[in-house]
Image (cartoon, rainbow over all chains, first blue to last red; front, side, top):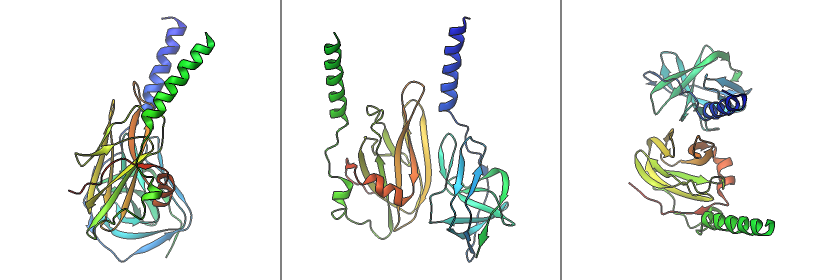
Length: 125
Length: 148
């Protein structure tokens, strides 16, 4: 194969790879509804979900408890849209355990998506 | 030769632009005339701002039901009961967006276009209300609202 052909093939493969993203991890889980707790995120946080796209949680957003899953407490906000992006886009609620973001709960899919690395959140009541 | 090529390009551009044109009222003009959703329903707005890939206008399906088309510079809306929703658009591949809808609330789905292998790929993205209201203001109404 000539160098020129190789370059063309490489470019085509690169374009194809750029157009495709891996799916968002979805581990089936069950949400036990709950209410009565909330917090304010004082510093923004960026969550890596290993799809090549990250999700940003904005500072000064208020989060309300909506329930628990085995991985932690599930909180939702109305102050911003939270989505997880892979080959599709899914709305997500955050899952917090001992003050750290450990993943997202996907309410439509009823599934848990872990973050690549859990990270402490800066919060206040 | 150059003048002829320029003239041909101008005609082609004019044809493309006329194909993109949407004739309905602007969102900002319709505000007062749009009836509010029933109290037990939520509203989902769909809009597309990008003129890029204007010829690519796939159907928009909401939980399997065709609710409209991804027309550049256009918007439409549907009222639905609270629940879980999946938006699907399909060109060379199927793209999905999932989200929840609460009664009395609105969700905004922007229909974006990205590069595909053979043709552009149109996909729905959930947008914050403030950003969506600013973007949707200049788009034009392209379809009647439906109720289930």
